[in-house]
Length: 563
Ligand code: PEP
Ligand code: MG
Image 1 (cartoon, rainbow, N blue to C red):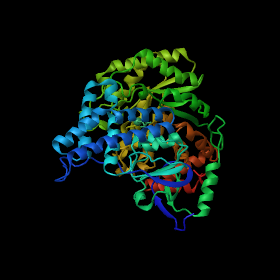
Image 2: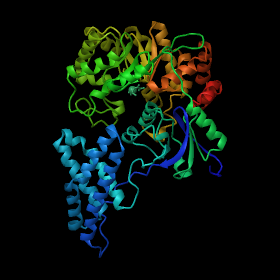
Image 3: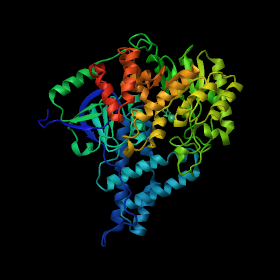
Image 4: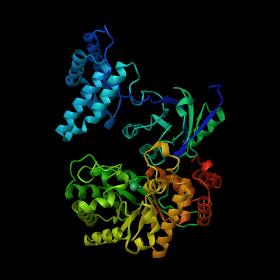
């Protein structure tokens, strides 16, 4: 163990659990080489051009070797990328630019990749989807030609803590939880894709740990506390022993969420890909609280057919016979663009035509979706609830409920993601049968802070007292109309915040299946009155950090369970 003293870097807790491992630093992304940079006078263009094919062979070999070691989807991705690195078109074009324009090889590669991408975009379909792989090969070539480490997570035999300035969503998606035991990033927000994926993979993570990359070097021991939001570089022996003991604990869930005094709190799963539904049921989820139906629509030139949708929805319903499954209609737009529904010309897509609003111009997409949901519901025994994303007005709620009723879908509700819906939840819930609070967007719109932008991470925190007030307001509307209010945003997966949400009046929590056992374990230790008291404590705090700390201080069980 190192003799250096522990250095604690504070960030935002996004995925609970404590873990320890050697640091692996993610190389900084390669930037665009300066435009017009040419060879030095006297430099031989032929020799410079020849370096490109050498680099391409090296990149191809490295990708193939990585593919041999990988499995499943990552293996396929790596093999496809290796094929592009081996394709002579890109290399020939880049060499030509060195020979004729005397560009430095890395700039020539950058420009040639741009030209190949443009051709692929024009061809559309399968080819258009390959442009991301071309950018990956381009970056690897530029790194090789400029003597920098290859982009992406470096190969490492033993499990490690990944430390990065920021993580691209695509990269986070390929992380292997058996190798990456913890994540610390300098940027990123609590509802960023990194946070969502880290929680889904069960990897303890801290984001917005400003300056973390200045405090660590490759190989330094790092202790990640994903409950408190700290990264300790050079932890002492006692800290390491406690973290390892905590990581070894396992928790089971008996299938029914409740507080210590027996008040039921439904613990449901968020499902994004129908293939994950069976695993959610195995994790003990009582049902599905949010089926994100975007999975079938993203990266498509047009909406999937009704038959295709029926098959996908049935797969989820079949995993939960007799149980509740809440299907959210399509949430296109902003961070989920879909060319057949949303425009890329909007200056502020998060404030534009997204979610239910797309049904104004394209009612047929929503109609088809409701047809498919009704057909799937008729064929399976699950209890199907339907809800619309991004509802802002009473009118929108009423017309959505009426539309669902025309399809025989009687339990139609709304997501509360916009402050106006939280404030108007009483009149909205006069027609809507339930509300499900999407704390990710509700936080974004309450705090006017982009959920994906690290620079505003402190604002984009569901512990913000203003967000908690809007949760309380939604619950008051629910109580007025005697309608259930749940939470399906990431806040539900935080055991400490879950206690507060229940105290504010929420009766169901929907989250990544991995979080269910932890949330259940903590809820089972507090009475409903205690939940209410802690909710008041959080509501009256001056800041998000104070709310979190005050509540955590009253929940010693979090310490015992290392959450
Ligand atoms: C939310 O906004 O909290 C939510 C659950 O929806 P999504 O994350 O899919 O936007
Ligand atoms: Mg949302």
